[in-house]
Length: 138
Image 1 (cartoon, one colour):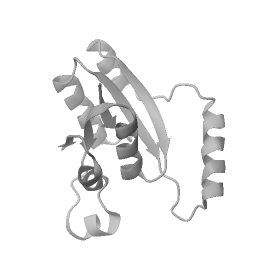
Image 2 (cartoon, rainbow, N blue to C red):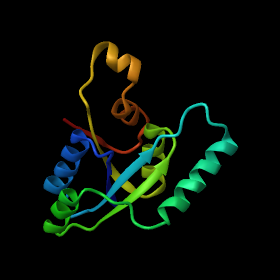
Image 3 (cartoon, rainbow, N blue to C red):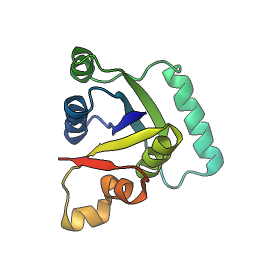
Image 4 (tube, one colour):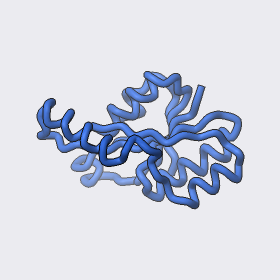
């Protein structure tokens, strides 16, 4: 079993990685990046975009900042970086369910009021949809 960290490169996501290192060093850690595809994309267009993105990255490893990689390496933690395509909350939950993830860690930008209503909250959607425990890190 593994711990999934939703990783988008933001400061809250980096705090979620720090939390994973501090509290789950004995587990495998999966850093999941979700490439959001525009909501107006048709199914065929979405699949074409997804294939082009896979080709452009050459199916090689997704790069993460060296300071995050160094922290994981220094803690001697087994980790992998994965990429999913689509709506972030949905992809995070689906990936976790399909890959024997025991817990999800996700950073929170701390938006409230109107900005949260207008922008939505990926963390909130993940908490509502996930069947496994979710830790929201601030």
